[in-house]
Length: 274
Length: 296
Image (cartoon, rainbow over all chains, first blue to last red; front, side):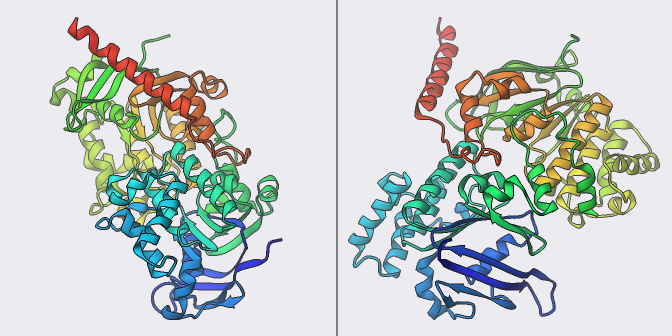
């Protein structure tokens, strides 16, 4: 088992005023160095909140987050700064996460300079060119704006922006959910190659178990702010321990004709909904 | 075999905004009585343009250049606005993609459901209210009275989609256009909605044109399917045959790009460059052959 990189224990998060109902009810999560972990759940399961808590974007009411051995739960902005380079995020909608008034070059070069990864603008530009090559974007993309790019190209920019800082950990939140399958396949393939080349740890949040199965080693299944099951993908998909995981897997429509599929599980779902 | 309920014949359309770029390239497809027909493709394939053309809501920047949409023996494209209004809602109904935006946020469900029943089925206000409650029961809503008194924001996404399905099937249409009806829903809710659409369709013998980007969803509800790419039909046939033995390389590429939890090596296979090149050549050859006769 890989050495621990990111360890969350007993995370409790509630939004709004004191006493508001919790969105996370004591969640434990562990991501090893270089490990890819899928976090799956339906809407309202708390998967996005968990991701935000891991990165310190929301402060938990209880519980701890440790990164590479250090407790980072209560760090202020200033002490968090060096961590920002090592913990990166790729967002669901690259259109709204890339500033439309900045060129792609500026979006990629500024964080490189901010984190001191290059001595000057020229060195930063060279670094960015290398990353653009790697994610399959033309170098001329630096002069373009996000709205001039296709969805797949924008998501490659999102990935480039995360990996250009050579992080240890990347959180990806529903990053392929708006893409066509052929574009999705390209983005997933790229992410898989990068995690392995860079020994990158990845927390991959998705509602889609099939996507998680294709690029993650482990999977964490969430429901109503709790982890209902966790384990190696191979084991969880072959023999889910929780009924809820079983129900989620059975609800995925595989692209093959199966006349009994629609009727199966109707009573299980009715009970789960009640 | 009786005549199909919907027969789209060589439908072509261009974009007026994009220098006359073709959007649909002589698309032909038919939906039989009681058939669920899947219209599959990636974004830009033209599937929603086809759905909109059937519903008579072609966007201003799109121009249909040739072809016909035959419905019950009439060409919908040649009907007057008034004639078309009589068909829509009554004989052809829509289940839209996004249940959040398809309902008016400021009107209660009862008002929105009874509109169609009064206008298209000539029921009195009281009759329409009773019918709306019965329809909600038919889509397995346990507490129809509460739902009727609710505003859309008070309902979950799955519940809103049930309301829209009840409203569409409640008009007893001959044809339902289901435009990505489960794309915005969680998988477990999606399965319930698919089950519901199929059950209602079978019970009433409704024909359904089911638009989807998801081959998995289409596999579970459609009898036949049409695969579109750049506005051109790539492959057509019985769902079981197309999925088990796809003939067109594009269909094969789509299946290979589709991740499946039972085969962890799938879903990482971008369309091979030679397939992309062949597709482009196929489209270019089609466009060249489509233009020439006019010069001759």
